[in-house]
Length: 87
Image 1 (cartoon, rainbow, N blue to C red):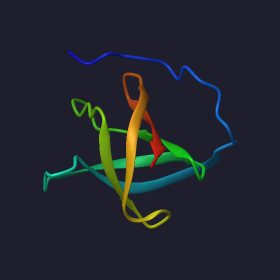
Image 2: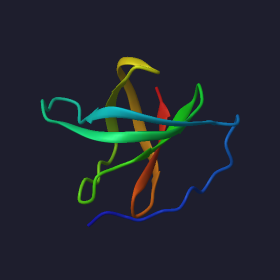
Image 3: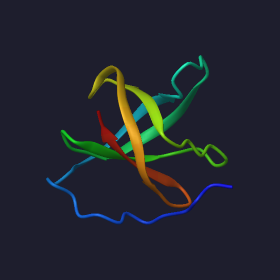
Image 4: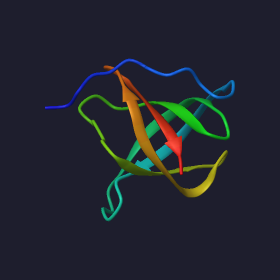
């Protein structure tokens, strides 16, 4: 059962609004899910996910804005989005 959390911490820096398609994968798995980056900073991003996809822990993100396979960890989630911190 996934834990639903709201963004619990203030950000260290402001995020820039963005609407860009991205691919999100779990480390060690080949399947990629299409998602949307909704805002981004050098430290992390807010991503909108398809319903039923609830990643936890580490993820790999690929998008034109951030390059290829950037490692991140899920730090918060709500019903439709996650917040990730880049590693």
